[in-house]
Length: 494
Figure 1: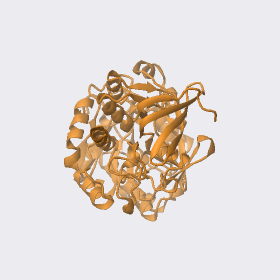
Figure 2: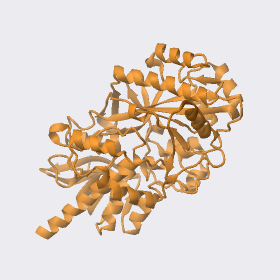
Figure 3: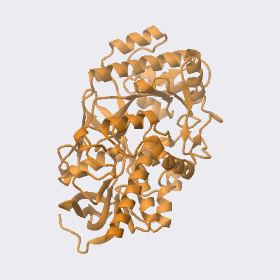
Figure 4: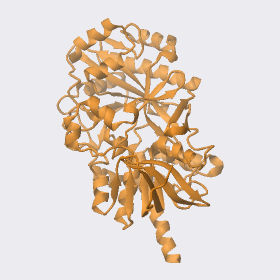
């Protein structure tokens, strides 16, 4: 590729504008660093999101329209945002704090230094304040969440009210395709505008191709601009926050830790279950969810309602016979859609291919199969306890009307037929001691580099088991703080 005629010099270059990159952009700009943010996707406004249909926003705001395949048996559909604000624009705005025991386990197993709950507490408080994080009670609508809570209480299972960064949520039921009211405080509406007020510049529709480096220093960043024009940036500091798939792929293309970056990516896997109730639920009126089953969180299982739309219901029933689909669509007011999220152990490998493409492959284990079967059984049991007259599994088959039927269905179905989805990937370039599998140090620097910092979900030492945005942002705050501290020390000693 021919290079641009005039390289663009800048102090700090942030690649990616999601949960991690936006935190870094604000921290750097606020500290007086000349900061440029590169984002591969477009920049959209709340008004543009509201004016478009969910299908249009799906194509515009997601990478590959939300359907990147993770190859294996079965194929898993992976979804991530590709726009200014990243996946925070198209997620549910859930902000769970990482459990202290999880951070302690990472510190013990991976050798992370300074990332226990006491170290991150101040960052978590700032995130909560800046994004207006609070418990999201049902309000009007959200009967699907109240039914989940009722079923859990009848079984003596623990559930929790969702914590969301969506003050003033209007319950428009469009969370996964962009908030039409602007209530959800994505990075597009929160950290990035604040970074711009401190002088940061955002370059949308700019795709980074390669990091040029010499010795321990990244010397240039090659990219393609909105019109296909070649661009070359020459930054003093590079913050790589292209996401748990994009960051390792870019490292591989740049010849940095090519053998290890992205090879053992951790994911959560989702399966969708449809329930029909004897009374109206009207699940099309509400938010993504306001109640979550957490009784089996230690086993890696969470259950929650999902956004119900006619299109979403048809997609969840894609393998079922037309009569079943038509019957449930005709009775939409009494139908609800639920997601079981499973933390699996089998890794996903990320491989950068020529032409900017990426190949994803999973290796689910036998234990993962057992977890998924248990997730289906327990979810059906929960919904039947909540009063559902029938529960439809995610694959073709008769509806389940008893716990025994649910158990038999889970035990005897072929996992190769299960339509699974993932929207959470992490730990593709984990932080930790090199002799324990770590790829980067406690400042997010890949081993062997001084001016390159990873700052997104890729640095987490493992799967969180919960929605990871809060954990990613807390790590990003700490990484940025350490980066700035190192800069101050260099100025003092220089």
